[in-house]
Structure formats: C-alpha cells, structure tokens
Image (cartoon, rainbow, N blue to C red):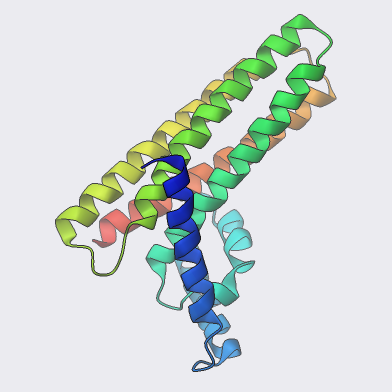
Length: 201
C-alpha cells in the first residue's frame, strides 16, 4: 500500500473511531471504564505491560470496549509516529555532530530508523485493513504480513543501536540510546499485540 494511501486509511479508521466514541447513545463514563478494563486485560500479553497501559490509557475515551483489533491498530500507529519523530531528531544531530566518527554513527542510525519506520508503516497499513467482516483466510494473511513488517522494524532498530556503539561516550549518545530503547519497547509491544490477534483468530 502506498504511503499516502496508508495515511488515508489510518485517518479513516481513527476518524470513524472518534465519531463512534462521541455518539450520544452511550454513556461516556461507562464506556471509558469498560475500555480501560479492556486495555488492562489486553496489555497483560504485551512484552512491556506498563508501557502498553500508559500509551493506551491516553486514548481510552476513543477506544471501543470490544475493540481489540482497534488497540492493535493504535499500537502500530503510535510506533510509526515515534519512529518518524526519532529519525528526524537523529538526522538533525548527525548534521550537527562535530566529529566525523559520531556523524557517521548517527547517520547510520538515522538510516536504520528510517527503514524501521517504513516497515512499521506497512505493518500499520495491514492492521488498518482488518475489519470484523474480513474473512478468516484473508485476516490470517494480513496479520502474518503485519507481524513480518513489524519484526523487520525491530531488526532495523537493532541496527541503529549497533551504529550508536561507534559513538564517543557523552550526553548525545546517552540520550539517543535511551530514546532508541524506548521505541524498541513500543515496537516489541506492537509485535506481541499483533501476535495476540493472530492467536485469537
């Protein structure tokens, strides 16, 4: 799926979600409580449960109480956005780096993060296409693709971390390494939640 089309699909999914969440036919407080319980239960299977809960609770009001697939879609979108933001940050640091050794390491990390973002975006596109009406064979194929793409994203993040080992110790290396660890946790959670959809089907 082309990047622009992917963005349109994701926008449609979450615009629809927000529209449904704001419907006057349901009690907002009751719905949020049910969604929070779903999040708690859903995040038990995540690699990093506390991070999973932290990310999803920010969006509890727009999550349907039965929206397990919706949660997986949201996880992939959050991962894509974080990767894109970090890639831009590292690119800026690479341009500012004084030492050629650090600049080379940061550029290598930036390139790897860019590749990770592309793979995560592909995973998000496959997740966004999952609907309750999707046939089981098609859903299984989409979930398998989503898993493969997100796994590729995680591998590229590892490449970024390896590149950072070539940097001199200092605040820039420490900060970027910390941010890479954080985004790797988000990606690992997305991968485990996609796997949860696969086993549920």
